[in-house]
Amino acid sequence: NGRAITGAGTVTGSKLGKIGEQEYRFPVIEAEELFLWEEYLRHPYYYPPYWDPFYHPHFYSP
Image (cartoon, rainbow, N blue to C red; front, side, top):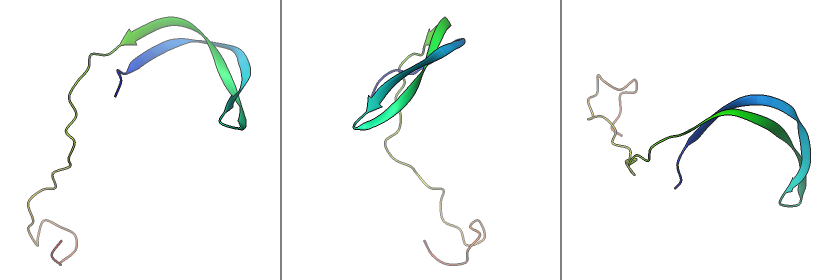
């Protein structure tokens, strides 16, 4: 896990590189503003809502 970053700038060109064995053209950006977000704890699980036959669009038990 890392920290999120938001940036703004102007695309000034491109640079040829590789991702694995595949060639890829990366954008070159002249950064004008960068913001590093604070770390936050993500919940590792998804807790579905309680089960109710009239709450769910399908009428069967999950």
